[in-house]
Image (cartoon, rainbow, N blue to C red):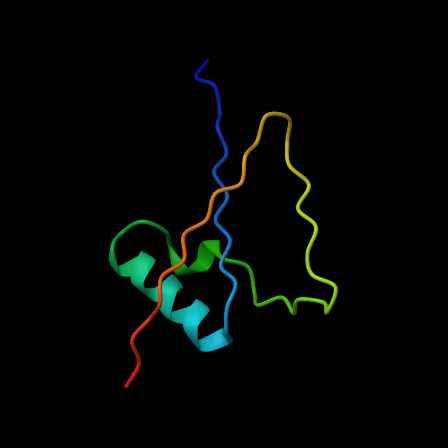
Length: 67
């Protein structure tokens, strides 16, 4: 049996920017659009992420040129 490793992707930003990122990842063949959740409002006090044992958090930030 091949061990299963879960990789989670989080997008945090404006609705337009997160949809743009989802569309780009889809066009690159990386993730299907339907694999993403609906937009979830972020509460004023932030988010709590509950990791599995041994998980780490990594993120990437990239400015998107508009206009």
